[in-house]
Each structure stands twice: as C-alpha cells, then as structure tokens.
Image (cartoon, one colour):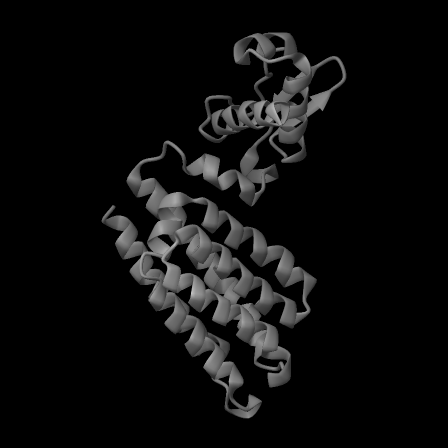
Length: 235
C-alpha cells in the first residue's frame, strides 16, 4: 500500500510539471537514479511512476536514451485535466470548466438523440438511477451526489447500447467529478439537478412520436451549466 502511494505521489508531481510546462516538450528527464534521490524513493518506484506516465501518453522512452516529454495536447488523455487545472488562475480554470461542460452538453445531445428512439420499458434502469440520485441529493453529501450523478449517466449510456458514446462520455463525467471546485459548483444546489433529470426522464417517458428533440432536452442542461459557471465565477 505504501509503495503504491509512493508511485502515485511521484507520478502526480511529474504529471503536474509536464502539464504546467515546467518539463518542456522534448526535454529529457533526469536518470532514474537522480529522480529516486529527489523523491527519496527506490528506483523501482520511480520506474513504475514513469511507466504510468508513458502509458498516459506523457512520456516516450527509448532504450539507452531515457524518457522524453511528449506534447500532452496531442498524446495525453482527459485524465490529465485535474493536473492541468492545478495552479492555474481563476480565469483559466473557469475557461477550462466552460469547455468541459460544453463538451459534455454536445455528448448529451448525441445520447439524448439515441434515447428518443428507445422504448419506455428500456428506461427502467434510468428511473432507478434517478431515484437513487434523489436520495443522494437529499443527503447533500457532495461526494455521494457526484457518484450518484455518474450512476445516472452510466444508466443512460447503457440504454443507448453504444460503446462509442460510453467510451467518450464516461471520461468527461469522471474528470468533472474529480475537479473539486467545479464539482462543488455543479452540486451546490442538488435539487436543481434533480429537477433537470426528472424533466429529461419525463420527456423520455412520452410516446416516441411526442418526445421533444434532443436539442430541446439539451437546453435544460445548458441552463444548468450556465448557473454552474456563474456560481463558479463567484468563488
């Protein structure tokens, strides 16, 4: 457990240094021996941390040449965003949050478009997830609410039966939940989230010929995101 935590710590420091540009694209990292001395860990821990960053697309390695920093904007994944946000100005964090929410909305349009054609009987898992979200919202435990929100999203994505949408949408939602300021702003008034989900669910419960368009349903989410960003801007 302690060894695993040490790997996490080393990887996180180097990840943030890459995200902030402290370690420039193309720069060669110090040898494992020097990194082990710097972090006061053994070389095995350093090697494991570097391997993790290589898997994330942040480093490349060649036998005998060591580790080189890659351009994370081209090779990184969404999991890098929490490190990218850390240390940024309030204005920069707000811009990143706005972009993340916009991406989520566009994915939501695709998901909702698919759901418009789903029979009502297939929505049972979504109903259960929304009701669980209602209970979480009543607790006002932000971590629990965020987890329940991810469960609703998972239920919606499962109903679409689209692996493409699942693989695209799940990482975005997970990253949103991992950004403390944004997560707190999204769930500051969880009852508004409840209202949004119930409105979407009610629309999907209508006969398919009477269901509103995906864009109309997404407008509900857009208003919620507008409130979230306004709340975040005041922090």
